[in-house]
Amino acid sequence: MANAGSRLLDRRDVEVEEVKAEEKLQFCDLVPDNSFYFESNVTFVEYTWREGEFMVRGKKSKVAQYILEKLKGYVISLGWTS
Image 1 (cartoon, rainbow, N blue to C red):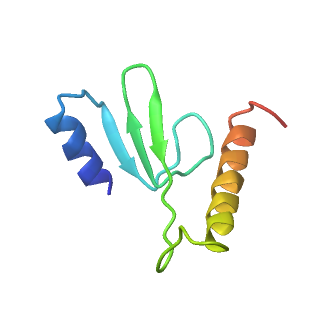
Image 2: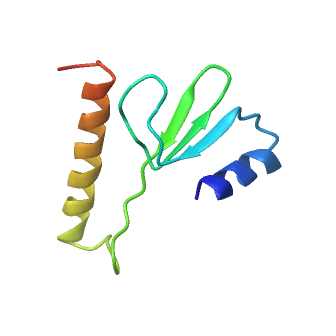
């Protein structure tokens, strides 16, 4: 997925300094699925894989809970809250 993201950015003439897959960020202990290093920021991507249709009653909340737990981990690791 990191390679696909890199190619997409290249096709859109978006300059990216570095693309990493499942590597610790340079400035904290987070390990995102993909990270895209730009001149003044880093964008990271976390994927969630679910079998079958996940936008149905009962499964939406599990996906939302997973995303919120990931966000909580990022917010705490980046020192935005405790």
